[in-house]
Length: 325
Image 1 (cartoon, rainbow, N blue to C red):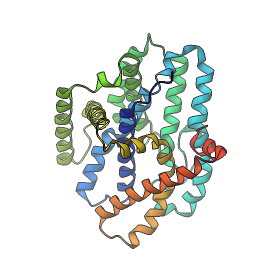
Image 2 (image 1 turned 60 degrees about the horizontal axis):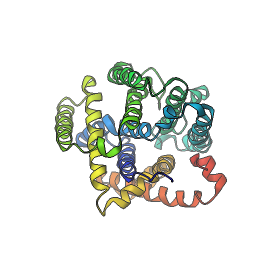
Image 3 (image 1 turned 90 degrees about the horizontal axis):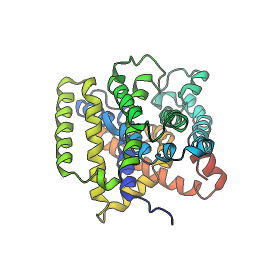
Image 4 (image 1 turned 180 degrees about the vertical axis):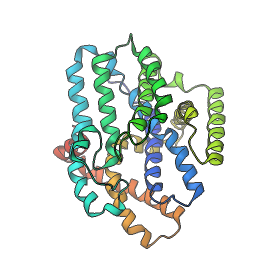
């Protein structure tokens, strides 16, 4: 009997993709807007760790099925690296023609593609998840997952100390290593607990809210990240999202967020080019920065969903663009 899909996880992914697109929409227009800059810093503390945690949570088979290593490797290659390569070809002409509207517009070095620096800069996520997945498939087991999780969570704590100059415009060693511990943490928890067990503590939820609020206030006052608090704050913020996703899974309003979670991969891959076009068109009609951010976020999500519906009907397009069979 097929295992029932956990809707709470889809809702958590839905929350994550909303935060990702909101952050990508904010970044080019936040300069000079202290409130937006502050919100951007808060979001970037935990929105990608949330995605890595959930990715690790649903990827527990990487360590629980050791006899199928090369099958798992093939699956991860198709799911992650085919879109990584195909979208690079699609996005590169846009990056050249519309360089002033893309988020990462510096000169592109072709060899950096093999180090995670995709022309579509946001696809560093696929590259890093793939590298982690390969490591897990061949090096991690149920017996040593706890040890590796502790080690990589320590790496996440100290990763912000690595200079951002080590890397490329869209992928740095610092930000990449910051995510790794959360992937392992998600996998570890998934191998030992079910989702409900993890998200049933109301007391931990309120503690998490307090931690996030305190950190956010510190960010607003200092106007800069506090590196030694980032990982612990991100962990608590992830718990807030998981707890809320569990609550929302029992509510009637769950369906739209759950749907976004199910389509999060497609939205993630499609929204980048749409944002580039939106940055050209929308400012002609919307002058208020806050309304612009909200409008571009909503429009890019809606159009991404509509395009994904069409692509998913074509088998070859679905495979090449989404890594989905």
